[in-house]
Structures are given as C-alpha cells and as structure tokens.
Length: 137
Image 1 (cartoon, rainbow, N blue to C red):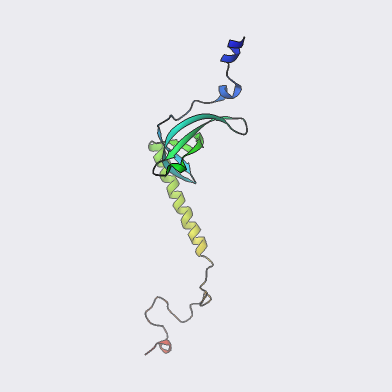
Image 2 (image 1 turned 180 degrees about the horizontal axis):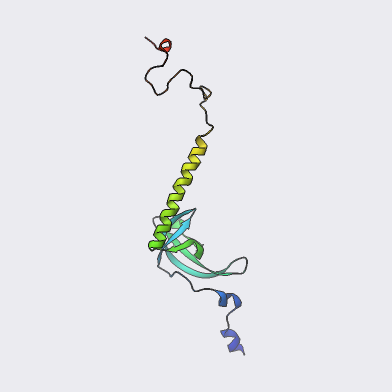
C-alpha cells in the first residue's frame, strides 16, 4: 500500500501541463508591456494562490545585468520564432503609440507663463514682429 500511494501524484501534479520551455532555451519574455529576449536558466513547478498548477522559469534578460534575472510565470514567455517575433513587433508598436498619446495629452493645456498663452501681435517664428510699430530700428 505504501508503494502504491507513493507512486500516485497529487491532484495538483496530475493537473499540471507539460512545461513549454526547457533550461538553456532562448525565448522572448514580457517585461513591463514590452517583449525582450531572455534565456531560461532554471525551471520549477509552482502552485498559484488559487491552487492552480503552473511552471515558473528563472530567466536572464539578454543584455541586462544579472541583478535583473527573475522567476516568471510561463504566461510571460513566448517562443523565439516567427510568431513570437511578430508579437514582439506588435507590442513595440503599441508602446510607441501609447507614448505618443501620452505626450500629446501632456502637451494639451500647457500655456507659457510669460504670455499667458496669448501670442498676441508677435509671430514667434518670424525674424521680425508683424507690426511695423513693434520693430526696432
């Protein structure tokens, strides 16, 4: 009986899917809404707070110092293939659009303190004032 019980897996272990990635595999990983190349250094089985079985991977972000290495859930990793590279490009494009929109919003409503936002009779792009009376000399 002890041998049979020892050979049985827990419900969590039986429900765990096969791991998608292996140690030393190059992958793409999501970090702060961008996707970066990474290398898997370690793999471990984990269980979420809800009791769901998952795999976690200890990754080294390529080109970054070792202090940034971290454990990430499988959901943050993608294969380094055409589909992964396409997703990486899409995420980069979306990040550019979001940054441009943020800059546009930040620029709205700003007024120069010196003229209260009223450009008046002065063409700030011209070499001389529009009104002859304002010209010097």
